Image 1 (cartoon, each protein chain N blue to C red):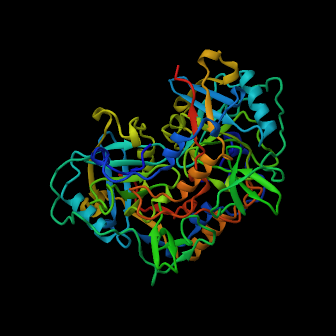
Image 2 (tube, each protein chain N blue to C red):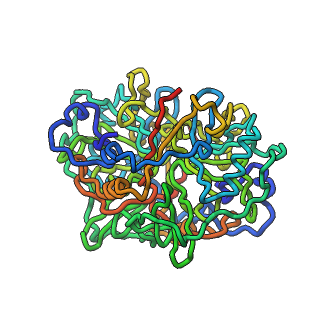
Image 3 (cartoon, chains in turn red, yellow):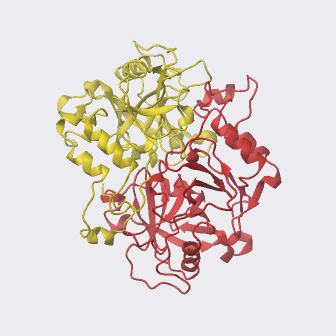
Length: 296
Length: 296
C-alpha cells in the first residue's frame, strides 16, 4: 500500500521527490511485535471454493459465543458439505450455506441461539474512535473489533463493515442457527447492527466473494442453481494439518501503534492529501491483519 | 427490493403473515411523478465494455463544471478509443482511461482544470441528513447529490460513496484532466472528499466494475496488459440515437417523498428489524434512480 492512492502508474515512478510523511501503512509496517496478537487457530474459519480460492474468516467468540460455538460445530460436523454461495447482492452481501436444506444439525449445535446482538459495555476496554458515529452514541475498538456502543444504554455491538460476517435469519425472534452466513461486500450496512448476530470478519480473500456475479433475483439470489458457487470445504484452521494452516496476527487495538494508525486514518497528511478530514468513519479504520506464514 | 434483506428463500415464501410496515423501497415505489427529475441526456455518460455490459454515469456539472466539460469533450472527441479498466483495488476503486498515454487532448479540453473539490455552500438548498457525519461539520443532499458541508467554513463537497466517480490525479496542485476516471467499489473512502474532483456517480451497471478481478500490483493495478478490461465506447447519451438512449430519473432530494425515504433509512421499522438505528450514514442513503425506458 502506498499513500498515492489514485495516482497513475507513471506517477508511481516519479513519486520519489517530496519528503515523505508517514501514512497509516507505514505505521502498520513499522509496528513492533508487541502490537500484534496471533489469532487462535480455532478462531479461523477457512473456506475453500471448489473452483479455487480461499476465504479466511476470523471468528468473534467474545461477541457471539453461542453462534460461534455453533459455527465450530457445523464446520467440525461437516454440515457444509455441498454448500454453495447462492446469493450475491451488489453493495450488500454474499451469502452461503445450504439454503433451505433440512439437513439435521450436527452434534453440539444449539438450534435456537439467544439474540447475541449486543453485549454489556461494562468492563470492556474500548479504544474510542474519536469521531462521531451515526449509528451509536459512540464508536471504537474492543480487542481488535469495531464496535458501536452506548455507555448510557449499557450495550456494545459489533459493527457491520466491509468484510463483516453475520448469521442469516428469518423474522425475529429467530436469530439464525449459523448454517447460513453472509459477508458484507459493499458499504457497511450499519442499520443491521443490533439486529443480526455478527460472528466475525473476512481477513483474507474477501475478493473471492466480492467479484462474484450478482444474482438477478430479489435480494440478489441466483436465478438458477447452475449459478451457485460451490464450496469445497469449510474447516477451522485448528482442524487442519499444522503445516498447512494459515496463521494470522491482528493488531492490538489497545497498542500505541494502533492509536497512531487511527490518528493518521483520520488525518491523512502525506503528499497526496491537501486537506486532512479531521475525522473518520468506523468502517474506514480497518483493523490491520498480517499473515504469519507463507501461502501453501 | 424487499425489506427482509437477509431472509432465506423459504422465508420469502412465508413472509405474507404479519402486517407490513413501510420500507424505504415502498416509498420509492409509491413516489409521485412530481418527486422525480429526468436527468438531461448530456449529463449521462454511457460506457460500453467490449465484452458486453454497460455502465451509466450521471455527471455532476454543478459541482465540477470544468472537469465535467472536459469529460464531455473527451467523450465527443473519442479520446477514450482504446481505453481500458487497468486498475481494480478491492474495497476501493476501479479506474479506467488510457493509463499514461500521451495522446493529445481533443478540442475543448482544459488541460489543467482548477481544484473543483468544493463549492460555496451559500445559496445551496440543502436537505440535511439529520445524523452526525465524521467527515464534515454537517451532511445532506443538494439537488440529488450527497454532500458534506460546513456553514462556518463556507464550503460544500460531493461525498465519496459507493459508485461515486472521480478524476484520477497525481500530486497536488494537479487536479487531473479527466482522462483517467475511477468509480468507488467499496466502503465510501470519504477521506478523499475535498482532495479530489468528483464528477458524478454510477447509476446503472456498477456491478460491471465491482465484479472485475482485483489487480495484484500495488494500488490494484493489473500486472499484465492482457488483464486490462477493454472499453468499446464512451458516449454521452445526447450523442446516441434517440431511440437507443437510456433515460433515467433521479428522486428530487427536496421532495416530501425523499424526506420520508431518508427518515425510514434511518429508522427501519419493518418486520425484519428489531431496533431502528435512529441515525444513518450519508453513503447509506443512496439517492433513488429509476430507468424510464426499456433496455435496448
